Amino acid sequence: MTGHRTFTDIVRGRVAESPDREALIVLTERDGALLPETLSYAELDRAARTVAARIGRHAAPGERVLLLHQSPSLFGIGFLACLYAGVIAVPAAPLGALGRPEERVAGIVKDSGAGCVLTSLAEALDVTQLLARTGHGRVTCIPTDADVPEAAQGVPGGDGTDGGAPWRPPRQEPDDVAFLQYTSGSTREPRGVIVTHRALLANHRAIHTALGTVPGGRIGGWLPLHHDMGLIGQLLHALWLGGTAVLLSPVAFAKRPAHWLETISRYGLTVSGAPDFAYDLCVRRVNDSQLAGLDLSGWQVAVSGGEPVNSAVMRAFADRFAPAGLRAEALVAAYGLAEATLLVAGDRTTCAFGTHALPGPPGAAEPERAVVSCGRPAGVEVRIVDPDTRRALEDGRVGEIWVRGESVSPGYWGSPRDSADTFDGRIRDGEGGYLRTGDLGALIDGRLCVTGRIKDVIVVAGRNLYPQDLERTVREVSALFGSGTAFGVPGEREHVVVVQELRARSRYGVDLAELTAGVQRRLSEQYDVAPGGVLLVRPGTVRRTTSGKLERAAMRRMFLNGELTALHQWVDPEVERLMHSVPPRKERR
Image (cartoon, rainbow, N blue to C red; front, side, top):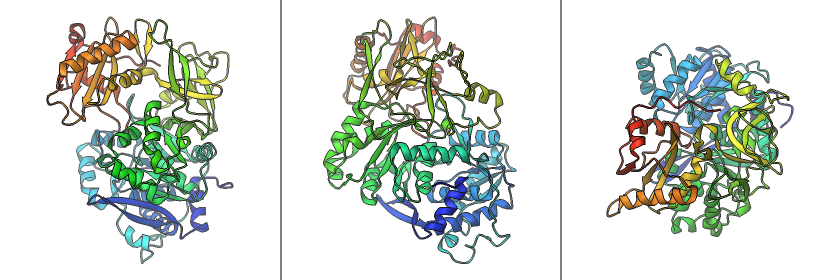
């Protein structure tokens, strides 16, 4: 894994070393079963060269090419084809994804200046129509799967010529841009994080060291490939190791969470991960008969990342799947973000349900709050800094997490002002060049504990309340509660508003007014807070990004605009007066 200057060099080296080794195993759901499609390194390389030659007829090296694929195998081929062509890949959520993919795709095309889109023949018409509707009709749509099946099988057309000029390896340097990772949009408008080959290789080395990944191993899961955790952590890291990426779709997981665990069991995955909510979903929806068929003894690293880790969820997961051979020490909490390529902190020595005590806010009912450690910084320097004074804080104090190192991106695409604000943090009376993450946390004995995002913190009577703490407390009120969110509504004082989903078919014969009152009582008892609003809503109302993060800012906006339909609600008259009249919340850093 040394001596390679770019990720393209890495992949080409793997092809030369082990052409017949399985590179991708993609599982497609049919009639409730997952059927495998396999590509060897030679087949993947051959298909990528074919598509790279096709890209070269429409885009010059350094130009941006959008990736829009439902199929993980076509996404993998398209991504490598972009590397092979020397163009900058721009992964985006396919049009069938949850959320607002059409609006997001149009925004990414405009922001990145993409001149081409790689998609499938089946999706090309919808993509072309979207581009035309949004004023991007001149963007060229290139079908990734035209002749690719034959190319992958090594029949005519599979030599990288595509019937035209032969493919030639591009000249690439470590500081060339490999791809743009657009942020999830959970806290602000999505922006394109520049990921260079140097940063990408540095982050893979950090993941390898921190998690103990093994050359040739099998890694994978269901995470979307347009998201950094799925793309880098599950697809690209497997290729970096010369191993096999085993991938299923997010839709297959959502329909039947057992598919994820069955994939780990059946295909011998040693490393797989997901956000906290996925582990909770498995605890609740994997039944005893499904559990009986699992063998999770080979699952060496089960990463929980992408959102704050709930120690109770992880302990429940460990207990639930211990009969299937899952070892509790395999559960690992990690912290990362696209602006640092992916991983910032995490190691196999830190259990995901081990907690540290951090001082609580002054006057709080509980003097301390328990937080999960995400382990030691991985290949980067981490400092905790007061976001207002920019002074470094001592061990155990909560402040903004600042990061510096080779994995950190040089900035946002086409946004020099935002890049300077975010990527050139300077500690007062100290050094600069730090990434300001916008996340809050503390270092305890060299391990990073993450408490939440600055922009999500709710300030009530001078106290900082973390929405994930409130959300966790609310879910404990009733077994009928599913996903929920809490956010602050600014007025003369900040008000806490809770939007809580009821599980499907659970509202009939239920005293909704009493459930609402129960939420009010629990928040008052535990946090000495009288909420300004409690809304009980149908499943699917609480919005998440395509990577599963709660979109609290969007939920706040929908609430204030009166766009939420509740099964039952109680709203304080003062908060009701604020609806339709509150200006956009000023972002805190």
